[in-house]
Image (cartoon, rainbow over all chains, first blue to last red):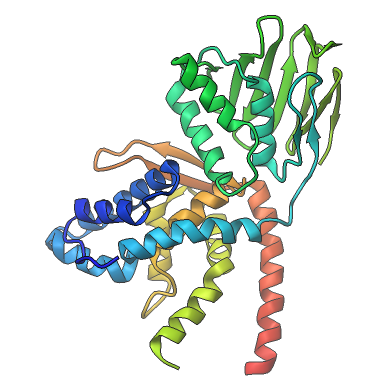
Length: 232
Length: 115
């Protein structure tokens, strides 16, 4: 793509967005936020210089829009490859629910549990923006990973046209209270450090009576017939 | 070796090293750091041309955070978009220790041939 060097922050961000055209909207937003944070801080740090002059230097320090766009596309794959050492594999099974195989790490497990917890029916959510950010982070991590259920959550929410997961107290933990169906309340707790707890208060899932704590582990939970097993 | 070859070699080297350096910076920091602060710490630690563009550390920070090696919190900023502050996790420290060992071993091996 051949275009003149940006002379303002707005131009830089516009070019960055153009170079990321077609990418995941979450990735584009991440890149724009990061770039804007850096560029505005750099402009503020040099009040004696014109914005255009700073933008000229930016290409050699922060990187030109095309370079930065390439970094966002490439880096995640490389880092993911480097982080494959602490891999845990496992399976989350909830009778009657979808089976989610092979969460490769804590993020996968978190998504899997969340998927199981929300099933296809989520109800309400008090702090939607905070949860959305959390989910955006999870999605960013999964951008090139195997798809599991988050898309169904998104579709479900879109259909409902209302935020549907009840969440509160997003400081140390993120309790997500939801129901697969009215008779099957499920509480999934995803803590900030990735620990996961999933509880069905009472009821049946797929014909199995389940109650109490179904699993809590950093890596994931194996949930089957109301019995719990942790793996790591 | 022309300039483009040098850049390509440096880029290839940086693949995993940026992650290692970012974990090390955050491990040494007593406080949470946001992207710009980290970028400036790295820039000030190196004279001459930067080893990697500062814009490349942001996606790595986000990937490390998504992988559980860092935690992050968002703080609103009046001068621009919200800032994301990062802190290394216990898992991040464990991974850093492992990566340090790998790096030291690799560096020692390479040095045997080039020094």
